[in-house]
Image (cartoon, rainbow, N blue to C red):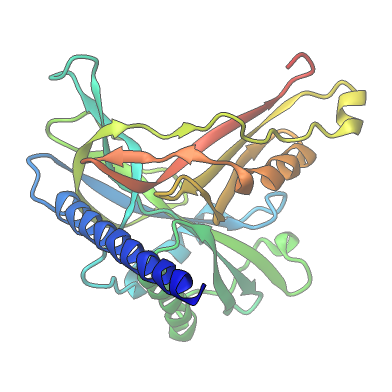
Length: 299
């Protein structure tokens, strides 16, 4: 019995070692493939948007732009800025039959902080997104430096937006305009309240397999009171699908929802969903996706 158990342990150790070597070899191959020189790239502008966490309270556009300019002045990017999450809708080219899709790295993060009536900022923290730790630390450090600098003026003229002496703010840093000489991209004029922070030149890689939901995923439960009242609606969620096809719960963001109870129903099931992950250059990668959930009485 002892000899059988010992032999089983040896076999397990050998098998586990071989599996680890295969995983390491595959990781090394993917690292080389994803970081190899490629002929095509795009320039992505990263933008900052800041607004009241409670959307019923309004932050003036001028103050949001002042805030963004201060953040841009204080932000010191980590060098190199390594990003390992992808956007599977980076662009396409008509050179290939079927207008082949391409992917590019994606940087999108969300923060929350408190604005005081005297212009001070406190409690800056990360609340979602792709969770690039080095970048997140740099952003939080920039927010702290912005507060210490005294550059941000006291918020005047929108006292009604405050709850007591504070106003909770939400800040998003996300991909903005995309510039390319060979691929279709989005060129749009600057939007009010949006501050361009910096630009990244990133390679674009052909998509081997797009993200796809697996069969058997749970469905959001239709709130009974809304069904009884005949209320229909839709929720649009954004989240990160990991290379193993699972969802990163910390990345989830409700982009839009017709009714809050619908959003709560979606948030409760998305972490349990499984996907076939995005594959680029023969490698499974993390990807940021947006997914609609429709609540219809006839569905």
